[in-house]
Image (tube, rainbow, N blue to C red; front, side, top):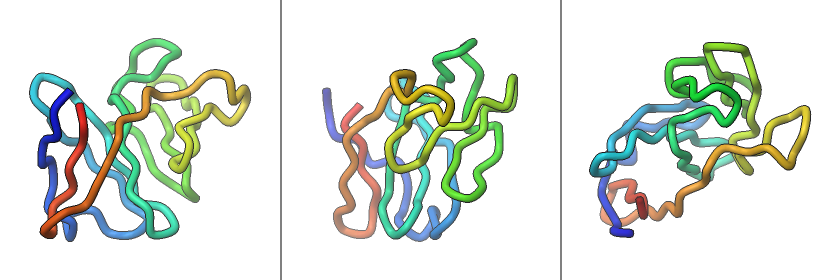
Length: 100
């Protein structure tokens, strides 16, 4: 894995999500309660692009079947054993970096 800058920090305000590219991997980022989280942009249910859904009340909502995932853990709200694939994040020099 390699650390890759994906967004400027100001491009992801509190309560927002954003798609990004880290090398060949599509990812989705969200900022909730001051923390930035990154996940592979693929719903574990049917492979839907989570970044094309909605983000509300700290939940990423897949556009295909409305599965809801908690931004801070990536867990599906109906069964925490099912989750988005989490990627390490750090903020450095005003940029959001992901280890993808």
